Length: 378
Image (cartoon, rainbow, N blue to C red; front, side):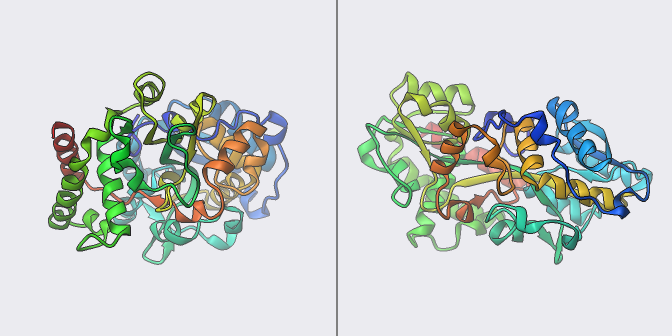
């Protein structure tokens, strides 16, 4: 399954499996209008996550009385195609794309803005409904998507051989010559990390984000990032593309620091490794709820989005995806071990500094792959 670059299930920070059925079934307030029509919601989301239908939707129905009709799709292209068909059929009320795609949904007339007065925006963790995330979620002055789950890519480090802490850890550490033969990186993420580091040091002719807007600027900035990254390519002990490779780099091949998914940090927590957001901000991916332009059950849709922003709903949704909850208090429903990992990885203002992957069009993905190949071959 391909969301942004790969499956959410391989990028776990929080395994909120400690959330029990009792917690998910906690009561919620529901407006009379939500039950005034069908009392149902037609939801289109990701296939392959059985706990949604087995646990989460029944909990939502018990809490609100609204039944969810689940339309499972394998990927975002299939969702997009089905959303287009729904313009004629009205078969879908809410879909769950990633935020980097919402602009395309909106420009094709597939979505309408959420009525934020009917949502509990204050329930979201800082940085997930405001700041940069709020800007990305807004198209034409309307909130086109509200988050459901999210995750990060940040610094994995050996507590013995590469100790660091929040506020000190930097993307620049990945390219420090003292770590020759000890760094684990994903090629395209490494180049983005170099670009963001250079940007933070004022060493780029234009902001790094400008490179996501047009080909000429992308090539200009990525040429610089590639050249700088190649200078310390000897740092790389292993490139990774998936979770198993990443863990092997640290457990078997001598890596002591790297840029990895939160799942890697979580899985290595008992092996002497920590996971921390860099001072430039952790890379962040996300997905959320989009209200289709001709949704039939609009009130129910708002109740659904609002429920997933409660601690119980958010914890359940995150557990189903093995991803991070979006609501305040959801982490409190997890085990003490999970809570400790979460708070240590993203302390203080770290969620407000998250660097959300921007929209990446087809031309960008193609060029990004070419730059990654050049970096690996250098």
